[in-house]
Image (tube, rainbow, N blue to C red):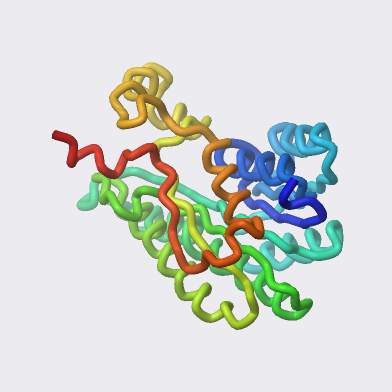
Length: 254
């Protein structure tokens, strides 16, 4: 229970990686405010599972792709929790298309969700942390796309790479306030979104071909987030942690 007494806000927590982060923070002792764009059964399930772990949970829905809504989400989380000690930024929107045919509006949407949303939310949370004093932890969920320029993913690759450098810059500026800022780069994670994008059969066939012999799980990413949010990571800031089961090295295999 290394996060006992801590208050956390997790965006994109209705399912997948965001839900995995919210649950692992709760297992480590944190009370958690969970956000997603729309309130609904999936977000309520995350809420219920946190409560079943004996932790305090709050639902703070809102579209974190838009600045005004971000302000409302952060204000609601602070009101519910009393303060925010830990923030896990997990907004994302992905769209795949060949570069030569990429819809400019879709490119903007991907950057808005993947990069801009991270900026808006982290700035608002960081202002709160600086004002109240006592430090804090900010964790951005980036992607192995930061290192591997997958085809048909120009916008997502750019957004996730930008997110890592954004984290590094924020870490530099917030170090005097003892706010640790880091990123996590998940590999291929077994989430509902991946099943929707590739299909169950394709994922089942691909899993044994990965270096670790399986896809990652939301819990794998959540455990990394819980570590970076704990005092064990006090001397870690301005870094990006690969949690990909060796995926990025696959092309280097003999």
